[in-house]
Image: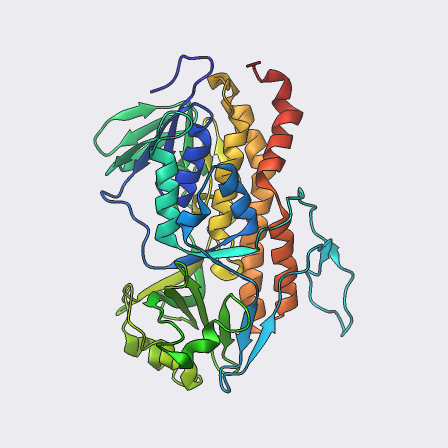
Length: 441
Protein backbone atom coordinates (compact mmCIF):
# COMPACT_ATOMS: atom_id res chain seq x y z
CA UNK A 1 0.00 0.00 0.00
CA UNK A 2 2.95 2.39 0.51
CA UNK A 3 3.24 5.02 -2.19
CA UNK A 4 6.12 5.56 -4.61
CA UNK A 5 4.45 8.72 -5.91
CA UNK A 6 5.95 12.10 -5.10
CA UNK A 7 2.61 13.80 -4.50
CA UNK A 8 0.11 11.19 -3.24
CA UNK A 9 0.28 9.37 0.08
CA UNK A 10 -1.31 6.05 0.89
CA UNK A 11 -2.91 6.47 4.32
CA UNK A 12 -4.35 3.93 6.74
CA UNK A 13 -6.88 5.30 9.22
CA UNK A 14 -7.68 2.86 12.02
CA UNK A 15 -11.19 3.43 13.35
CA UNK A 16 -14.30 4.64 11.54
CA UNK A 17 -15.71 6.85 14.28
CA UNK A 18 -16.01 10.63 14.25
CA UNK A 19 -12.23 11.09 14.64
CA UNK A 20 -11.29 8.67 11.87
CA UNK A 21 -13.88 9.91 9.40
CA UNK A 22 -12.93 13.57 9.92
CA UNK A 23 -9.25 12.85 9.34
CA UNK A 24 -10.08 10.74 6.29
CA UNK A 25 -12.18 13.51 4.76
CA UNK A 26 -9.47 16.12 5.30
CA UNK A 27 -6.77 13.88 3.77
CA UNK A 28 -8.97 12.76 0.88
CA UNK A 29 -9.59 16.35 -0.13
CA UNK A 30 -5.83 16.75 -0.60
CA UNK A 31 -5.79 13.96 -3.16
CA UNK A 32 -4.36 11.23 -0.93
CA UNK A 33 -5.48 7.60 -1.10
CA UNK A 34 -7.18 6.80 2.20
CA UNK A 35 -8.41 3.51 3.61
CA UNK A 36 -10.28 3.20 6.92
CA UNK A 37 -9.93 -0.06 8.82
CA UNK A 38 -12.85 -0.66 11.19
CA UNK A 39 -13.20 -3.76 13.36
CA UNK A 40 -17.03 -3.62 13.45
CA UNK A 41 -18.89 -5.47 10.72
CA UNK A 42 -21.56 -2.79 10.58
CA UNK A 43 -20.27 0.48 12.02
CA UNK A 44 -22.95 2.86 13.26
CA UNK A 45 -23.19 5.60 15.86
CA UNK A 46 -26.27 5.09 18.01
CA UNK A 47 -27.83 5.82 21.31
CA UNK A 48 -27.06 9.41 22.23
CA UNK A 49 -26.68 12.99 21.12
CA UNK A 50 -23.72 15.31 21.46
CA UNK A 51 -22.80 18.98 21.32
CA UNK A 52 -21.01 20.27 18.23
CA UNK A 53 -19.55 23.59 19.44
CA UNK A 54 -18.38 26.50 17.35
CA UNK A 55 -14.74 25.41 17.31
CA UNK A 56 -15.79 22.06 15.77
CA UNK A 57 -18.27 23.68 13.39
CA UNK A 58 -15.46 25.80 11.92
CA UNK A 59 -13.65 22.62 10.93
CA UNK A 60 -16.79 20.93 9.61
CA UNK A 61 -17.65 23.99 7.52
CA UNK A 62 -14.11 23.95 6.11
CA UNK A 63 -14.61 20.31 5.12
CA UNK A 64 -17.86 21.10 3.32
CA UNK A 65 -20.39 19.67 5.72
CA UNK A 66 -24.11 20.33 5.22
CA UNK A 67 -25.48 21.82 8.42
CA UNK A 68 -28.96 20.95 7.20
CA UNK A 69 -28.00 17.27 7.25
CA UNK A 70 -26.86 17.58 10.86
CA UNK A 71 -30.44 18.46 11.89
CA UNK A 72 -28.93 20.33 14.81
CA UNK A 73 -30.68 22.42 17.45
CA UNK A 74 -28.83 25.74 18.03
CA UNK A 75 -27.96 26.63 21.61
CA UNK A 76 -28.69 30.13 22.88
CA UNK A 77 -28.28 29.52 26.60
CA UNK A 78 -28.68 27.02 29.42
CA UNK A 79 -31.00 26.58 32.37
CA UNK A 80 -29.89 25.25 35.77
CA UNK A 81 -32.77 23.95 37.83
CA UNK A 82 -33.23 23.29 41.52
CA UNK A 83 -33.73 19.53 41.93
CA UNK A 84 -36.30 19.98 44.72
CA UNK A 85 -38.39 22.96 43.62
CA UNK A 86 -37.88 22.60 39.87
CA UNK A 87 -37.30 26.36 39.56
CA UNK A 88 -34.65 27.43 37.07
CA UNK A 89 -32.03 30.07 36.41
CA UNK A 90 -31.11 30.99 32.85
CA UNK A 91 -27.42 31.22 32.07
CA UNK A 92 -26.51 33.17 28.95
CA UNK A 93 -23.82 32.63 26.37
CA UNK A 94 -20.15 32.63 27.42
CA UNK A 95 -18.36 35.96 27.55
CA UNK A 96 -17.16 36.84 24.02
CA UNK A 97 -13.60 37.88 24.88
CA UNK A 98 -12.11 35.78 27.68
CA UNK A 99 -8.48 36.82 27.87
CA UNK A 100 -7.98 35.05 31.18
CA UNK A 101 -9.58 32.34 33.24
CA UNK A 102 -9.25 31.67 36.94
CA UNK A 103 -7.86 28.16 37.21
CA UNK A 104 -7.03 27.87 40.91
CA UNK A 105 -9.30 28.10 43.96
CA UNK A 106 -9.40 31.05 46.37
CA UNK A 107 -6.67 31.10 49.00
CA UNK A 108 -7.51 32.26 52.56
CA UNK A 109 -10.75 33.69 51.28
CA UNK A 110 -9.03 35.87 48.67
CA UNK A 111 -9.24 35.50 44.93
CA UNK A 112 -5.87 34.61 43.35
CA UNK A 113 -4.47 36.45 40.38
CA UNK A 114 -6.03 35.05 37.18
CA UNK A 115 -3.85 32.69 35.19
CA UNK A 116 -3.69 33.55 31.47
CA UNK A 117 -4.96 30.91 29.10
CA UNK A 118 -2.97 30.27 25.93
CA UNK A 119 -4.22 32.68 23.28
CA UNK A 120 -6.11 30.91 20.50
CA UNK A 121 -6.24 31.82 16.85
CA UNK A 122 -9.25 34.07 16.40
CA UNK A 123 -12.11 32.71 14.35
CA UNK A 124 -14.91 34.40 12.46
CA UNK A 125 -17.96 35.77 14.32
CA UNK A 126 -20.13 32.82 15.38
CA UNK A 127 -23.26 31.85 13.51
CA UNK A 128 -24.22 30.20 16.76
CA UNK A 129 -22.33 28.83 19.69
CA UNK A 130 -23.21 25.13 19.59
CA UNK A 131 -25.48 22.70 17.76
CA UNK A 132 -26.99 19.74 19.58
CA UNK A 133 -27.02 16.83 17.13
CA UNK A 134 -27.88 13.19 17.29
CA UNK A 135 -24.60 11.32 17.01
CA UNK A 136 -25.84 9.21 14.10
CA UNK A 137 -26.79 12.33 12.09
CA UNK A 138 -23.26 13.71 12.44
CA UNK A 139 -21.79 10.31 11.69
CA UNK A 140 -23.82 9.80 8.52
CA UNK A 141 -22.87 13.24 7.22
CA UNK A 142 -19.19 12.55 7.84
CA UNK A 143 -19.52 9.18 6.14
CA UNK A 144 -21.15 10.84 3.13
CA UNK A 145 -18.24 13.26 2.80
CA UNK A 146 -15.72 10.43 3.19
CA UNK A 147 -16.97 7.77 0.79
CA UNK A 148 -19.32 9.69 -1.51
CA UNK A 149 -18.66 11.91 -4.49
CA UNK A 150 -16.49 14.89 -3.75
CA UNK A 151 -13.05 16.37 -3.91
CA UNK A 152 -10.29 13.77 -4.11
CA UNK A 153 -10.54 9.99 -4.41
CA UNK A 154 -13.30 8.48 -2.24
CA UNK A 155 -12.20 6.86 1.01
CA UNK A 156 -12.28 3.06 1.04
CA UNK A 157 -14.10 1.85 4.15
CA UNK A 158 -13.07 -1.67 5.16
CA UNK A 159 -15.45 -3.07 7.77
CA UNK A 160 -14.67 -6.15 9.83
CA UNK A 161 -10.94 -5.37 9.56
CA UNK A 162 -9.54 -5.69 13.06
CA UNK A 163 -6.00 -4.49 13.66
CA UNK A 164 -3.82 -6.87 15.65
CA UNK A 165 -0.52 -4.98 15.54
CA UNK A 166 1.23 -1.90 14.16
CA UNK A 167 4.84 -1.06 13.35
CA UNK A 168 4.85 2.75 13.57
CA UNK A 169 8.36 3.14 12.18
CA UNK A 170 7.57 1.34 8.94
CA UNK A 171 3.87 2.17 8.79
CA UNK A 172 2.84 -1.50 8.85
CA UNK A 173 -0.48 -2.67 10.27
CA UNK A 174 -1.38 -6.33 10.67
CA UNK A 175 -5.01 -7.38 10.17
CA UNK A 176 -6.88 -10.27 11.75
CA UNK A 177 -6.95 -11.81 8.27
CA UNK A 178 -3.18 -12.13 8.44
CA UNK A 179 -2.64 -9.45 5.81
CA UNK A 180 0.05 -6.85 6.46
CA UNK A 181 -0.69 -3.41 5.03
CA UNK A 182 2.08 -0.86 4.51
CA UNK A 183 1.13 2.82 4.57
CA UNK A 184 2.95 6.12 4.34
CA UNK A 185 0.89 7.37 7.29
CA UNK A 186 -1.08 5.50 9.97
CA UNK A 187 -3.75 7.48 11.81
CA UNK A 188 -4.75 5.83 15.08
CA UNK A 189 -8.37 6.84 15.68
CA UNK A 190 -9.37 3.58 17.33
CA UNK A 191 -10.79 4.96 20.54
CA UNK A 192 -10.22 4.49 24.23
CA UNK A 193 -9.02 0.88 23.85
CA UNK A 194 -6.66 1.80 21.03
CA UNK A 195 -4.31 -0.85 19.63
CA UNK A 196 -2.31 1.82 17.78
CA UNK A 197 -1.73 3.70 21.06
CA UNK A 198 -0.02 0.67 22.59
CA UNK A 199 2.46 0.55 19.70
CA UNK A 200 3.02 4.30 19.61
CA UNK A 201 3.71 4.62 23.34
CA UNK A 202 5.32 1.19 23.77
CA UNK A 203 3.03 0.19 26.64
CA UNK A 204 -0.61 -0.48 27.46
CA UNK A 205 -2.40 2.62 28.72
CA UNK A 206 -5.81 2.08 30.30
CA UNK A 207 -8.39 4.47 31.68
CA UNK A 208 -8.83 4.61 35.44
CA UNK A 209 -12.26 4.80 37.13
CA UNK A 210 -13.66 8.27 37.74
CA UNK A 211 -16.16 7.12 40.35
CA UNK A 212 -19.03 8.37 38.19
CA UNK A 213 -21.40 6.48 35.93
CA UNK A 214 -24.34 7.69 33.87
CA UNK A 215 -27.55 6.55 32.25
CA UNK A 216 -27.86 7.60 28.62
CA UNK A 217 -30.84 7.41 26.31
CA UNK A 218 -32.86 9.41 23.81
CA UNK A 219 -36.59 9.99 24.19
CA UNK A 220 -39.08 10.91 21.52
CA UNK A 221 -39.90 14.57 22.16
CA UNK A 222 -43.55 15.58 21.80
CA UNK A 223 -44.64 19.06 20.85
CA UNK A 224 -45.74 21.55 23.50
CA UNK A 225 -49.29 21.10 22.26
CA UNK A 226 -49.07 17.38 22.98
CA UNK A 227 -47.30 17.77 26.35
CA UNK A 228 -47.75 21.34 27.66
CA UNK A 229 -46.34 20.28 31.05
CA UNK A 230 -42.93 19.84 29.37
CA UNK A 231 -42.76 23.40 28.05
CA UNK A 232 -40.01 24.12 30.59
CA UNK A 233 -37.63 22.08 28.43
CA UNK A 234 -37.77 24.62 25.59
CA UNK A 235 -39.09 27.96 26.84
CA UNK A 236 -36.79 30.96 27.40
CA UNK A 237 -33.65 29.76 25.69
CA UNK A 238 -32.74 26.90 23.42
CA UNK A 239 -30.18 24.75 25.20
CA UNK A 240 -29.51 22.26 27.98
CA UNK A 241 -31.45 21.90 31.22
CA UNK A 242 -29.48 20.60 34.20
CA UNK A 243 -30.26 19.77 37.81
CA UNK A 244 -27.67 18.75 40.41
CA UNK A 245 -28.50 17.10 43.74
CA UNK A 246 -27.67 19.29 46.73
CA UNK A 247 -27.39 16.45 49.22
CA UNK A 248 -25.84 13.02 49.27
CA UNK A 249 -23.69 11.46 46.55
CA UNK A 250 -23.23 13.34 43.27
CA UNK A 251 -26.21 13.09 40.93
CA UNK A 252 -26.99 15.27 37.94
CA UNK A 253 -29.70 15.27 35.29
CA UNK A 254 -29.06 16.76 31.85
CA UNK A 255 -31.61 17.16 29.05
CA UNK A 256 -31.31 18.72 25.60
CA UNK A 257 -33.11 18.42 22.25
CA UNK A 258 -31.63 17.19 18.96
CA UNK A 259 -32.71 16.15 15.45
CA UNK A 260 -34.58 19.37 14.74
CA UNK A 261 -36.22 19.21 18.16
CA UNK A 262 -37.97 15.87 17.62
CA UNK A 263 -35.79 13.94 20.09
CA UNK A 264 -34.69 14.66 23.65
CA UNK A 265 -31.27 13.52 24.84
CA UNK A 266 -31.15 12.35 28.47
CA UNK A 267 -28.10 11.83 30.69
CA UNK A 268 -28.31 10.95 34.37
CA UNK A 269 -24.94 11.09 36.15
CA UNK A 270 -24.45 9.45 39.52
CA UNK A 271 -21.69 8.35 41.88
CA UNK A 272 -20.79 4.73 41.18
CA UNK A 273 -18.64 2.61 43.47
CA UNK A 274 -19.41 -0.71 41.79
CA UNK A 275 -17.22 0.09 38.74
CA UNK A 276 -18.11 -2.95 36.69
CA UNK A 277 -18.03 -5.40 39.58
CA UNK A 278 -20.23 -8.43 40.10
CA UNK A 279 -23.79 -7.87 38.96
CA UNK A 280 -23.00 -4.74 36.94
CA UNK A 281 -24.99 -4.49 33.70
CA UNK A 282 -24.40 -2.15 30.72
CA UNK A 283 -28.12 -1.50 30.25
CA UNK A 284 -30.87 -0.14 32.49
CA UNK A 285 -34.64 0.22 32.77
CA UNK A 286 -36.95 3.15 33.40
CA UNK A 287 -37.30 1.95 36.98
CA UNK A 288 -33.52 2.25 37.39
CA UNK A 289 -33.70 5.90 36.32
CA UNK A 290 -36.60 6.70 38.59
CA UNK A 291 -35.05 4.95 41.58
CA UNK A 292 -31.80 6.86 41.23
CA UNK A 293 -33.52 10.26 41.02
CA UNK A 294 -36.70 9.57 43.00
CA UNK A 295 -36.19 12.55 45.34
CA UNK A 296 -35.99 15.04 42.44
CA UNK A 297 -39.00 17.24 41.58
CA UNK A 298 -41.80 15.36 39.75
CA UNK A 299 -41.27 17.50 36.62
CA UNK A 300 -37.96 15.70 36.06
CA UNK A 301 -39.40 12.26 36.64
CA UNK A 302 -42.22 12.91 34.13
CA UNK A 303 -39.62 13.16 31.37
CA UNK A 304 -38.68 9.54 32.05
CA UNK A 305 -42.17 8.45 30.99
CA UNK A 306 -41.66 9.66 27.41
CA UNK A 307 -41.47 7.04 24.63
CA UNK A 308 -37.95 5.68 24.21
CA UNK A 309 -36.13 6.27 20.93
CA UNK A 310 -33.17 4.09 21.99
CA UNK A 311 -32.37 1.70 24.80
CA UNK A 312 -31.11 2.97 28.15
CA UNK A 313 -27.43 2.25 28.52
CA UNK A 314 -25.02 2.71 31.41
CA UNK A 315 -21.66 4.29 30.74
CA UNK A 316 -18.84 4.17 33.26
CA UNK A 317 -16.74 7.32 32.98
CA UNK A 318 -13.00 6.75 32.98
CA UNK A 319 -9.95 9.01 33.04
CA UNK A 320 -7.18 8.55 30.48
CA UNK A 321 -3.64 9.03 31.77
CA UNK A 322 -1.43 11.55 30.01
CA UNK A 323 0.58 9.99 27.19
CA UNK A 324 4.29 10.66 26.75
CA UNK A 325 3.77 11.06 23.02
CA UNK A 326 1.02 10.99 20.39
CA UNK A 327 3.39 10.16 17.53
CA UNK A 328 6.02 7.67 16.54
CA UNK A 329 7.57 7.20 13.12
CA UNK A 330 4.72 7.19 10.62
CA UNK A 331 1.89 6.85 13.14
CA UNK A 332 -0.16 9.39 15.07
CA UNK A 333 -3.02 9.26 17.56
CA UNK A 334 -6.10 11.45 17.61
CA UNK A 335 -9.44 11.61 19.37
CA UNK A 336 -10.12 9.28 22.30
CA UNK A 337 -7.07 7.18 21.43
CA UNK A 338 -4.94 10.18 22.43
CA UNK A 339 -6.92 11.87 25.20
CA UNK A 340 -10.22 10.22 26.10
CA UNK A 341 -11.96 12.83 28.23
CA UNK A 342 -14.90 13.12 30.58
CA UNK A 343 -18.00 14.72 28.99
CA UNK A 344 -18.33 17.67 31.37
CA UNK A 345 -17.04 20.29 28.92
CA UNK A 346 -18.89 18.75 25.94
CA UNK A 347 -15.67 18.96 23.91
CA UNK A 348 -14.63 15.34 23.37
CA UNK A 349 -15.96 15.01 19.82
CA UNK A 350 -14.87 18.59 19.09
CA UNK A 351 -11.24 17.76 19.88
CA UNK A 352 -11.39 14.77 17.54
CA UNK A 353 -12.83 16.95 14.80
CA UNK A 354 -10.20 19.65 15.36
CA UNK A 355 -7.42 17.06 15.19
CA UNK A 356 -8.78 15.49 12.01
CA UNK A 357 -8.96 18.89 10.32
CA UNK A 358 -5.51 19.86 11.58
CA UNK A 359 -3.80 16.76 10.26
CA UNK A 360 -5.32 17.46 6.86
CA UNK A 361 -3.75 20.92 6.79
CA UNK A 362 -0.30 19.47 7.51
CA UNK A 363 -0.46 16.90 4.71
CA UNK A 364 -1.47 18.88 1.61
CA UNK A 365 -1.12 17.63 -1.95
CA UNK A 366 2.55 17.28 -2.73
CA UNK A 367 3.51 15.80 0.63
CA UNK A 368 6.12 13.08 0.16
CA UNK A 369 6.52 9.91 2.22
CA UNK A 370 9.83 11.23 3.54
CA UNK A 371 8.01 14.29 4.93
CA UNK A 372 5.70 12.31 7.22
CA UNK A 373 7.70 12.22 10.49
CA UNK A 374 8.35 15.97 10.60
CA UNK A 375 4.73 16.73 9.71
CA UNK A 376 3.61 14.52 12.59
CA UNK A 377 5.96 16.37 14.93
CA UNK A 378 4.20 19.60 13.92
CA UNK A 379 0.82 17.95 14.51
CA UNK A 380 1.79 17.00 18.04
CA UNK A 381 3.18 20.47 18.74
CA UNK A 382 -0.10 22.20 17.91
CA UNK A 383 -2.53 19.60 19.27
CA UNK A 384 -1.20 17.78 22.33
CA UNK A 385 -1.33 20.69 24.78
CA UNK A 386 -4.88 21.61 23.77
CA UNK A 387 -6.13 18.03 23.97
CA UNK A 388 -4.60 17.62 27.40
CA UNK A 389 -6.06 20.95 28.54
CA UNK A 390 -9.56 19.70 27.72
CA UNK A 391 -8.88 16.38 29.40
CA UNK A 392 -7.69 18.14 32.59
CA UNK A 393 -10.41 20.78 32.68
CA UNK A 394 -13.14 18.19 32.09
CA UNK A 395 -11.96 16.41 35.22
CA UNK A 396 -11.84 19.73 37.08
CA UNK A 397 -15.36 20.52 35.90
CA UNK A 398 -16.61 17.29 37.46
CA UNK A 399 -15.01 18.41 40.73
CA UNK A 400 -16.70 21.81 40.43
CA UNK A 401 -20.08 20.21 39.75
CA UNK A 402 -19.70 18.03 42.82
CA UNK A 403 -19.05 21.17 44.86
CA UNK A 404 -21.94 23.30 43.72
CA UNK A 405 -21.35 24.39 40.16
CA UNK A 406 -19.14 27.46 39.53
CA UNK A 407 -20.95 28.04 36.24
CA UNK A 408 -18.98 31.21 35.53
CA UNK A 409 -15.73 29.25 35.34
CA UNK A 410 -17.37 26.80 32.93
CA UNK A 411 -18.47 29.65 30.69
CA UNK A 412 -15.00 31.20 30.65
CA UNK A 413 -13.38 27.93 29.60
CA UNK A 414 -16.02 27.29 26.97
CA UNK A 415 -15.56 30.76 25.50
CA UNK A 416 -11.80 30.21 25.29
CA UNK A 417 -12.33 26.87 23.56
CA UNK A 418 -14.94 28.26 21.17
CA UNK A 419 -12.66 31.01 19.86
CA UNK A 420 -9.93 28.64 18.71
CA UNK A 421 -9.65 28.16 14.94
CA UNK A 422 -8.00 24.77 14.39
CA UNK A 423 -7.74 25.20 10.62
CA UNK A 424 -6.15 28.64 10.81
CA UNK A 425 -3.72 27.43 13.47
CA UNK A 426 -2.66 24.36 11.46
CA UNK A 427 -2.33 26.36 8.24
CA UNK A 428 -0.17 28.96 9.99
CA UNK A 429 2.00 26.17 11.42
CA UNK A 430 2.40 24.65 7.96
CA UNK A 431 3.37 27.97 6.38
CA UNK A 432 5.88 28.68 9.11
CA UNK A 433 7.58 25.28 9.02
CA UNK A 434 7.01 23.89 5.56
CA UNK A 435 5.58 26.60 3.34
CA UNK A 436 8.64 26.78 1.14
CA UNK A 437 8.35 23.00 0.48
CA UNK A 438 4.86 23.17 -1.01
CA UNK A 439 5.10 22.41 -4.75
CA UNK A 440 3.74 25.06 -7.08
CA UNK A 441 0.48 24.18 -8.77
